[in-house]
Image (cartoon, rainbow, N blue to C red; front, side, top):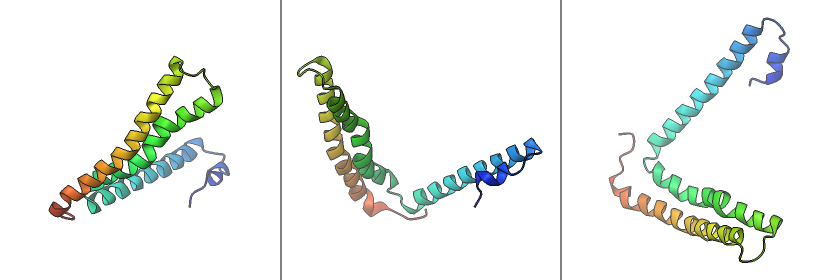
Length: 119
């Protein structure tokens, strides 16, 4: 595997080091594209999976965990504007965490009978 120290041992020419770094970067991004395309073709219900797993991962880290941490650290006065806003986002985040996986699973179940792999 390529490591950054291998290119740092070369001191000259600078264009060679830059082109080697660009080559490695482009190969890694191309490999990521191919892996994503393979997963998308293998699992035609990938959108449903994104909704299913996104509800578990995206909703807590985006909506209610930062609000809970902020409430713990800042300790705003109870029933102030910021206290209410944080609790509203906590409720919305918990609702999304419950509803998104249900919707993703429903999407997978409803369209499972029409799946045709690699077509």
